[in-house]
Length: 500
Image 1 (cartoon, one colour):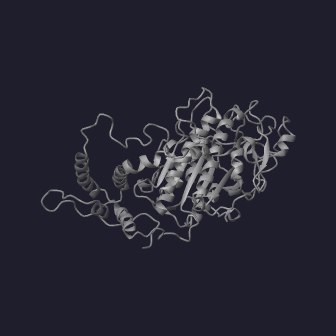
Image 2 (tube, rainbow, N blue to C red; image 1 turned 90 degrees about the vertical axis):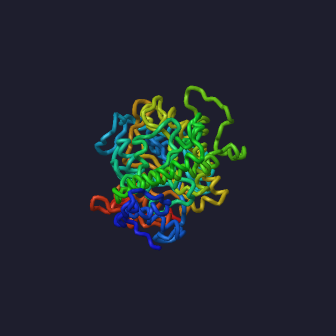
Image 3 (cartoon, rainbow, N blue to C red; image 1 turned 135 degrees about the horizontal axis):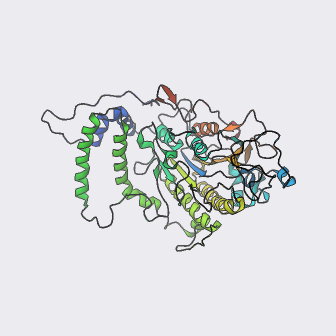
């Protein structure tokens, strides 16, 4: 069966009823064929045919993705992109050679990296001391140091990295992957989001919303570490009157009501998505608890991810051990989800509107804010790569690290850095990625790309990831408002220098 990557078309649903004014019970198979503007039928046909990969445009190097998103803008020049000129000129008046539009007032003297850099791995990659744990896997990583953005505003820049557009109303990257490839486990979501334990980053759930794609492709939020990681998955305490029989009868009634509702609304995917979400929730009642239960993981794995002993308490001030526990826990859950067939997992570090800083937006003090967050991230990310590798999963899993933009090489106040959308860093590892390499350079200050005519944009990262998944980014399109919309808009080039 060939797959048409565009929405639209389909069949008109039959009139509900059988001439007697009553609604006959429908099986899910019948309902999907008869509703949803044909989308349910297409999905069902694909499922019944069992043709995994039938819609791939070319052979895939990877099957799944885990995206690590540092919310608030991580400083490339303090973590990954060493600039000896900043060390040499530290404290001198900054001179960019051109007028600079700063987001706030961050055009003070040149500021050297907060942490010393040292070489790591066989490739000799220089890393800041705070992210030194990544040195153990640096030979598996490809760094891209000439990333550029379009805006220094957090919400817009986060949208750009998450959805390919710097404004709301467009599907998240995981939604496109879900739409293009579908799931690998009927009992778990295809796209899972693990937010920062303190709350959402800029834009919140809009970063992983399905927008104009069928609603079923939106990300499913899971909160590792909470008493109820999946909201409303189980009946509330005291609801003993909800029996298996009552639940079964309730679903049967809903099926009939849903069929009547859908008959008058052809092409509207929201009801079908809601039905699927309820059915998936029923399946997740069995599958999710096992997938999210890390108590059975051996001590050496828990230690690898930086997890603290059960019952550990934390001081009032944020610290690296606490961050390693929280981020490492999400990374461990991500590994468990990936190995159980979840296609795309998004792991967030940092939440919006928190002070003292609980994100990467270090205007006041890079050392105070980036220190614990970056150390915790490095422990968890390194563990994830090592764990995937030892289980044979790294070969077909892409690990993508990103942030909305970088930070300026000049000082804001005495210890902080302002926004820098003009250049920043992404890195990738895993399926189809060439490890131990660096692509693109920033200039001597880490202010803009060294080659300003040939920067790397998020569209290029997205195009490359889709390519490694077997998808041509120019052909994964959906007709919306007379435009063939896609993740990469009208842009995007592969980055062969980082592909194995």
